[in-house]
Length: 394
Image (tube, rainbow, N blue to C red; front, side):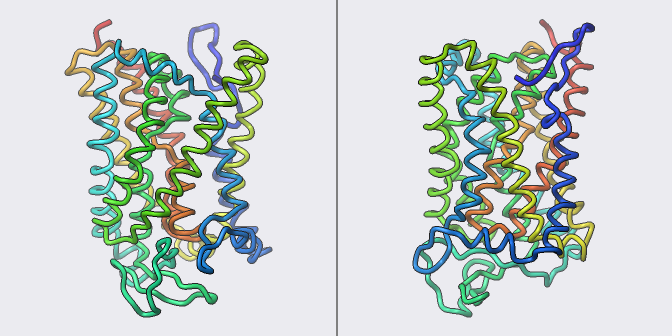
């Protein structure tokens, strides 16, 4: 944890990277747009250093390195032995799983489709198009249709041209199916929740993502008439979830055995937070260097994406918090349930969107907007929790 407790008993975020994450993201937007103007080909060149299959780029090596260092520090913090304690907290664990995997993905799809595909479609541009990667292994001729997209040739590479609003929808979908396993530790702590329950759910959600992330992602992308790159989805899970998960688990065991639990928690973990945030911010700078022209041409783009993400977060929080009260959960369990449901694992969403659709895609931009609004919104919800503890028994 990178927080502290003041003399008055209030909990505060101590680490400046986490405390001012929204500010850093804002600076990355400005820096990325400026970089795109000064060196327009830099991000494209870096993204072009890729593992290719049949001549098409599949995994951008620089981005993959950045994203691994975003994920590894998160995974190494998880003590999976805590999962066995979940049996002692049956109701909150069950409620959290239902919120995260049976409700949240579908409400995110519905809310995003309503706003991006209906209410805001005219503002985004009904005819505005976006270029995204062809699904891994798919070799269609130029001019062929796939879902809502058409195969075109861009810089000698076959790409899919899809409506821009559908590309934004894809990013929202990837956010909705990624329950948070990182910053939620901070939100639960600040809300004076049950830290043990939060850790248990982080471990369970990390394991559940291996099974359900690709299935739900493929299904909802297909329903939205978006390209469903099943092979790339599975590869994304392997690279961005399974690999750092295994690396974190093995290195955690080795370091604790060699140096001890205290050194691991007080020394090693504190070195990792700047690594995570630096890797995240580097990725964001590259992404916004691609999307700078789109944002400058239509500054309200961020707002159109942010509205459904904001409403989805509030809806899931209210649903989880209210259900916890109805089920008679104590406050220290209700707060983590609501926080885990409301927050998103934007690291995985950014990683997956860049692999599936490309760093310059609207889908990748939508996942970054999730980062931009999550920190201030979740801090607001923390205050809601701490001021409503009297609603719960215990």
